[in-house]
Image 1 (cartoon, rainbow, N blue to C red):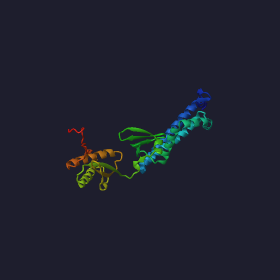
Image 2: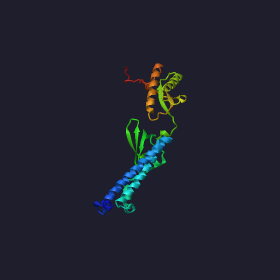
Image 3: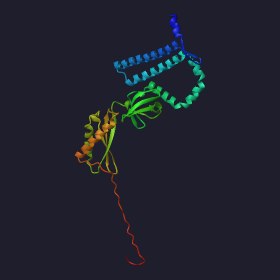
Length: 287
């Protein structure tokens, strides 16, 4: 027993007033292992509970993130205490320094606070589809400072959390299961309006991803300079890939317009030239 105590008390190295002994190193390793094990077990239990009770994936992710950050903050405090650093004294002694650092890293702290708000409030969750700065992004991960998303071009985007909490953001996932979208099209003057409306409805009906075919609507919008303008309105659950759906419907419309001899006009402008004839007298000499 005495031999074990002597081994644990063996001094490995010294940095200033801090002495690193064998038991100090073992304590640090033990704290890290216990923290990682505790987080893994809690994560495993929450994921199992999510699958069992069909709990929302975003809520589970937010809870896991909050628990992870809390555990690591406690672990860092214990690590500092293990090597002989008094956390309370450290905080009190470095208060002025922390104020200076806080001013310099104001935006970073803003992002961190925003991350805590997102994780606790859960207004934005993993899997939500957001419209940020005219870009559609599917949220893959919400971190403490930044969130990670994937846009429609399969490009991974890192988003500062403050951008989500302070700017106007549209959360398409907060809509009902189906959302209404629009496609605009113009036809030449002289076209049969009733036939155009019928063709547009049939074009939308042909697509498989139109969720409620009874709610398809076509509106005659306006008499434009070169065309009669119409709008097709339809509902779909394919929010993230809706541009692909719109493209497919436009191709169907184009095909049906050709089949029914409906013309999509080019911009036209009529120019009327008026010339003025001025009788000139050349000093009494007839021309």
